[in-house]
Length: 288
Image: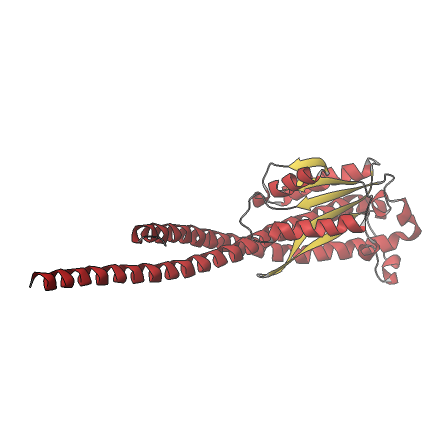
């Protein structure tokens, strides 16, 4: 059994760890609130631009088939934008994403998946599994996500899709639903799905200025940028929600461990004091 000195050292070590995890929990909580506000604020705009695209696409009618963004690409590969974290200590955040990816790969056995990756954890996982990584987005980091980053990413994926190598582009990210619920989600962004290109038939009778083709040329890039921007924001929000929960659990576990160690320490200390008193009393009795 550990000595009193060893127990004292362990109690101090656990206390130091608890201070670190509590500080990380507070940092994660602060950043979570900031990113959560941005993620929630981006949703109405994303929904509205999707509805606008729906109305204009309906107005095009049969001519919609001539738009490259609305039909499957000529290639056979699938571009996957994989969004993970840069650092660990985020609970099951990354492992849940990887499990969803493995299920998708199993359901699409034989697919030529090529990855565009955000987050060092995802990049390391893809290399370890032998996946084809076309691009690893390093700078700027995901934590500094803004609309320019989404625009840059959308341009890279759109160019890859229009190059003729890919038949579709999908995004795997964590959809933030609540502080304790964030679900790995696959979303096909290219070609634009019928759900995003369907609306009531009355939209076909509207007069548009400028012409429909010009509007789509401008609107489709904005649509892609908005979808990616929202996906990146929800991913980083989910990461900090998971890290906050993980650090809170670690802090609680450290508190419990520290209490148990202090109980053992106090018992051993009391045993030592009692033993010393017995020795003193025994020696005094022997001298009489």
